[in-house]
Image 1 (cartoon, one colour):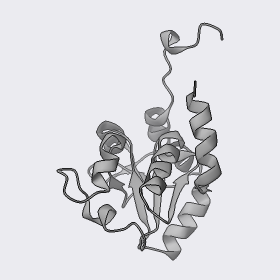
Image 2 (spheres, rainbow, N blue to C red):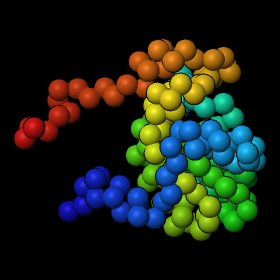
Image 3 (cartoon, helix red, strand yellow):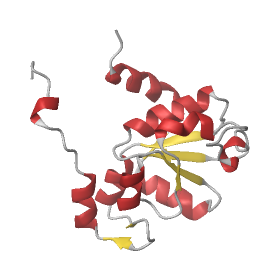
Length: 156
């Protein structure tokens, strides 16, 4: 039986990962780079990297293909020519999403290793759905892990 940790380890063998400061430098050098945020709508609306394209993980495959209600033309048409960096809250969903995109024929996909949480920890700017800056301390509370006691392993 595969566990999430196994899938993540396999994905790390295929998917390049960037640290926040590397992504910041790349965004400055390559404004055409596509930043793809795969978090849920409420997460994205609360705090995201300015200029990110929002496509929730649940519709990613359809967003990457032509002829679907969820098709996003910049994704469906960008398998070869477009550099894409996938982001999420912590770097796990983005890593798995980037692996799926590689499987779908995308040639230049990477993942933000620490996610938006690490981006915020590096004191890099975030905005909300209205495009207004999100204070780093506010973002920290929005991006914090919220594992309830009933979600913890009984063996722990």
